[in-house]
View 1 (spheres, rainbow, N blue to C red):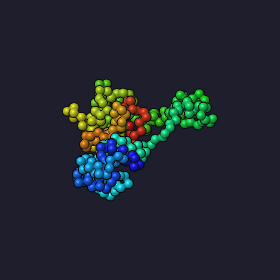
View 2 (spheres, rainbow, N blue to C red):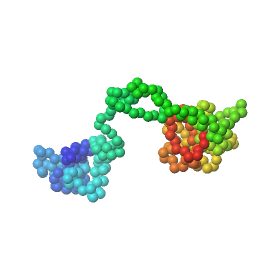
View 3 (cartoon, rainbow, N blue to C red):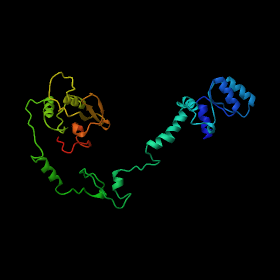
View 4 (cartoon, one colour):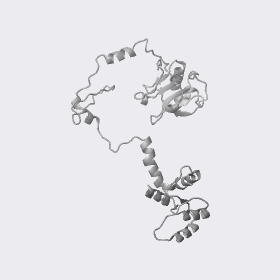
Length: 280
């Protein structure tokens, strides 16, 4: 630790003070505590002369530092706050191990490795995604009997699903106007009907924050923001009151006061919390 401290002081351009007289001479010359790098060749008199003529900061050895000395700590901070070797040690030894989870070794394996017989004799797998793309050793996917029929039955039940018939000359803005008048909390745009507008522009239009200059229906006043996804699939919220876009994780608007727009690209795989009785 003492050797590392000495190197940091030298990297910072200071002097390591190892004798009281050198420190006093440095205080008289530079006006504060500082450093002197000790050499095995110069005499004490020569060291004192160098200290009087050297205006570099003088820092005490590591074992003599006092954390309660605010002036001393401020001098150290100003001297070492931009020294690369100090910053590297601070990040590698304190910040990264505390705030970043990491391992010295990493196991690289594909689904074939984990599901095959190479690593484990017995394997049990479950996925909510119906797919036959599995390791050969696992065989074919065993679908739950009747599950797809239940889905179709639910999606075709009039008490669950209704439909709207648009006029032949419908436009994107007319479709959005119609949605604003319905009591829905979400738009799942599976048909790629919303074209010519970005997701942000759709959110602005539905909140009445667009610059089209025409009066048109807006979402109800209790809707305080519209959730959408940008090009990098980041979940964002356009806040009605401020007109600012913030990340969904930083938003304090409750689910019952949000409208969510899933564009055609993001209609699957996006987990966004809704109120329990939300309609789409």
